[in-house]
Length: 430
Image (cartoon, rainbow, N blue to C red; front, side):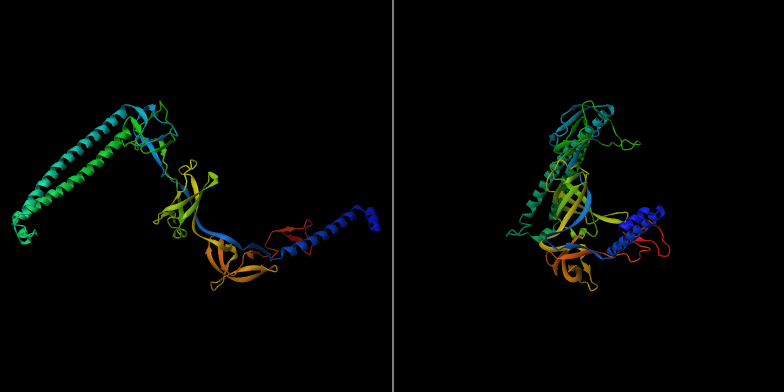
């Protein structure tokens, strides 16, 4: 070694470079051979057979519906001069929200709406008066019929009707028809009252929308109220070419109803879901929160968009939260089945034979051995093993095989020394 050292010190620079080059090349060649040998070994990704509760679920995405929210609106125009509530206040249906000093257009429309309401109210009273007359006529015609029908000429001594006489005498038939006609008119009069009552209710709602006072349409908590005293509410028309009036939203009212989430299910998943199925729901804006609920509605008619069929499904949450707001994006897992004390493996571990039977590869003495199994429940990620395996067994989920064509596949890196000619390049597979 000392002689080699002395020779190396006395050698010229060119000889030293050549020697270093040869030594590094030898080391690089050896390293590439070792790496290639390791790379050419088959590798197995494995998992352990587990025992526990296997939960089968389907997933869907959607948004929070506005089913537990109402809108406070008005068609009046003018200046707000008094507010009775503020954001966060609890109100009951019919409570005052605000008073408005109507502008000229608002006064005109409000007066017209009030006139329509009074007209509908008078029409209802007239219709009721007519019904009283019809009722009186009905009782009179019925009494005439009753007296005639119970007379000795049209009723036997034992109280049974004298049918032949009743069917043949014009006097009896006419009296009976008069009673039937009066009864039909009375029923029509009752229906007329129902129709006029609907017209009256519509007229009253229209007046409320145009009146100088804004009322709460339902009971709940006021949210999103942006009005203040002195705020101007302008008249809004849905079409500039006509006078169709649209409502101006003033605020929302959140009721105490539990929040509901509407999600879309695929045509593959919807047959698995039934009413009452439990679900877990998460929201993009509430990443650290998970809510529970159950399915209360499934629209089996479906919706088609761009050739894709989805089925809207509504989940009602089990609890209320002020953090959940309308139209928030949501994702849901609907539990369709579950089993306690079940053996299960990753779905990737189970393979199918051509005859329909299933098998897994179990690692024994560091080698995979195919084992026939019987499967049960399955989800997108896990499969129940009914027989063939035991808890703690190691199963193969994936096999990584080496690339056999180093010239065309796999990631490769050249030797830093380039081509040596004839012998090709030094390469190492990564």
